[in-house]
Length: 169
Image 1 (tube, rainbow, N blue to C red):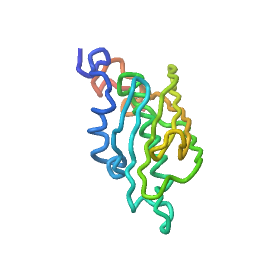
Image 2: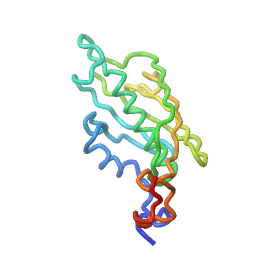
Image 3: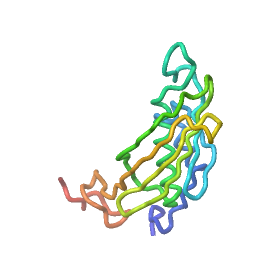
Image 4: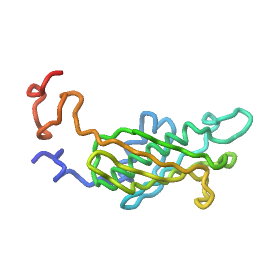
């Protein structure tokens, strides 16, 4: 079997994965950090930075980076629950703000995956600035499992299937 076979692939671990996810790209630029995880949840930290302000005269993190924090924590919670990294896409992410974060404060996003079906995963969580009982925001989301390899135009029959056998669109 291939090392990409789900039966032999290493178990997904949010802490280990964060070492790679947060080095580059959007999550790296935001400076996201791993905080903690359990069997079906992940908590990440978004450090306070002056260039991430929502308003120039108020030192509070903007809503956009907080949404990105919750989106990434959602994906990682799904992979943690599934125990493997599989392609997913955000279908719906609702964030309800309760209050602004404290000035010059980091924000943590704690998300749990509470249900997985054949085609979707459901998550809920909070963003907080150190006070979990007084969240900055609550969130709920739905993510779609992506079973089709868009490069091949169909669902591969095995992880090592050659590209030339793929059906052309």
